[in-house]
Amino acid sequence: MKVQGMTRAEVEAAFARAGLEIPEREKPEIIAAAHFIEEMAARVREKREMAAEPAHIFPPPGE
Amino acid sequence: MVPDFLTIAEAGALIGKRELSPVDLVQSCLTRIDRLDGKLNSFIRVLADEALAAARSAEAEIMTGRRRGPLHGIPIGLKDIYETKGVPTTGHSKVLIDHVPQRDATSVRRLTEAGAIVLGKLATHEFAFGGPSFDLPWPPARNPWDTSRFTGGSSSGTGAAVAAGLILGGTGSDTGGSIRGPAAFCGLAGLKPSYGRISRAGILPLAFSLDHAGPMAWTAEDCAIMLQAMAGHDPADPASADRRVPDYRAALSGELKGLRIGLIRHFYETDNPANEATQQGIAAAVKVFEDRGCSVRDLRLSPLADWAACGIMIMLAEGYAIHEATLRERFVDYGEAFRDRMALAALVTGADYVQAVRRRRELAAELAKAMADLDLVLTAAAPSEAPTFDAVSKFAILERPSLTMPFNVTGSPAMSVCCGYTAAGLPLAFQLTGKPFDEATVLNAAHAYERATSWRSIRPRLSPP
Image 1: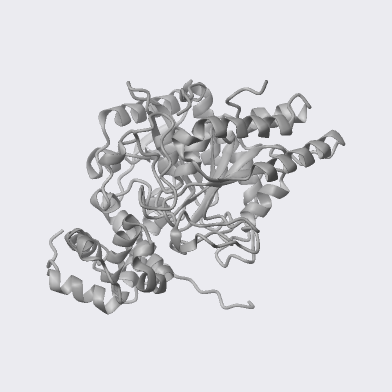
Image 2: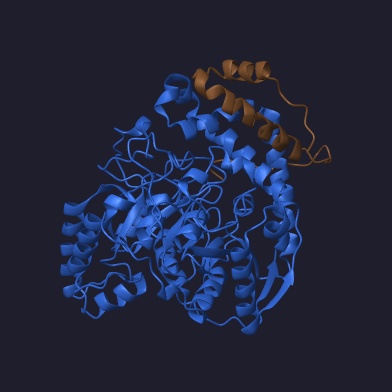
């Protein structure tokens, strides 16, 4: 599946925003795997109706 | 003299006839652990004194005619994400190394109330997610069929310990295949029941909406015995199903005639191609079912990668929410496999998560529709026999779509069943899936298959380290 492809800077910015202090040694391998997430994010975006519901249910407590 | 390998059903029958002492059985397993586990690393904590005390108590009860059932006096192990009162429950992690729960998980309480005897806490991938890892407080479990090989994960210790006959059954958990994977690689029967069938209360979570607890044992019959004890409604788990629990063992008729099976070939032929030995094992299993009166027809579903993407996006988002604060404060206290995989969740947006959960509803509806005129579906449980440790990459779960994740997405009962061995003697497996809450049909089909084949008579040959 064709995806945009995050840059190293974009991935590092996401880690920084999340507050993760990732050792420098480990960063290249994680960044190299980022495309898997982009591909999966694209895969779950099927064309669907606006009102298509998620699989969540929330039974109100006490019922 | 207690035999090295007994099933739960066999041992239970002998105990019931007072031909086998629970104390002797527990002592035999403890001796075996002492002799062999230095090579397997399946246990991270052995509870020898507690187990022997429980065995003496069980024996006294049984001798006075108060046998509780087929699990009374049976030695089991618990994956170390199942909380145990007063006994550390670590998730195989430095992060929880001092965590001593105040209560037992509901499923642990139910197993011990049924008379099972806990021999100890078993190795797992860190928090049922990151592994195999060599940088945790305990080493990873090794496969009893070949200790240079991976057990599968995350219920790695349970897979190794049951296969090696150190325990007769054990608990696993399955968020994307963590019962069925180790069951496949270690040659066991491993059942992920329907979502909601077994309480998750008191089990360290990985992903709330995908986590399933379940039994792992040598046979489908043993899984039925364990499931009977573990299943049932629990108000402490908001997802717990308030539904009748059938008599699973009574459902093991062995009758297969008329059963309608859908074969999802494309999952293991093209989407995540299985090796030749696995494909041959599945083809032979299909013939066993056909020869016994089942109708088997091909079934095509959405590509496997769609199911895997849906499950992994949900798993990462929910798992990250659980570990977020600790990852920020103690990132390097997690093992590298866990922390680097989970770091990728920082790239998953809120919209990604909701889209995955919307996709989940579509995929669950797709399977329900496809199974409207079927009783079971059959596909591969793993693409090959157990790989060597050095062949398992850090991001393996992302590189090839999981064959087991589809049934976490749908919450269906799914089971790994051994279907033979490679030329080198390594187990092979297929996967059977039923309709939600129809564990009985899955277990019966697996049981009938095991009875029709000779695979359950083959055990690993082990020697002390």
